[in-house]
Length: 106
Image 1: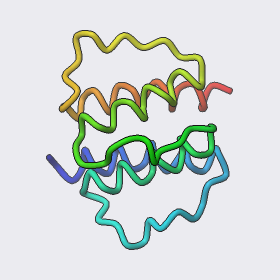
Image 2: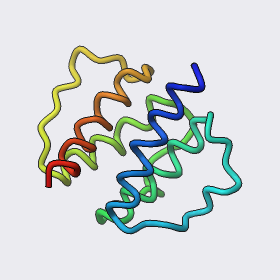
Image 3: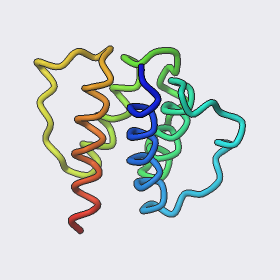
Image 4: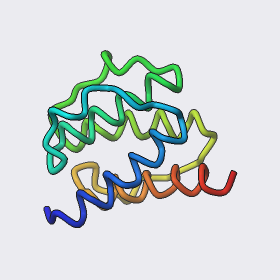
């Protein structure tokens, strides 16, 4: 995966974290070009929205999907991912873009 793709996803996640007033969740030790960093930020967002990220696994891109689905549902955003590959960054980007648009338009 390209560095620019990771940076784009990180920028969206950082915007969402700022919008939820989340600033400290141990990000300084994470490689921003890793699934671990995406999971850590999604976990922080889920916690802020009343979710329990401890119940979700953190090993793969596909395991990020339930967290993003939770966030979409929490924000009352309908997103049909039937034709999306759960192991694709395009799916992550599409879901994060929906969340970003919901926050940016409020």
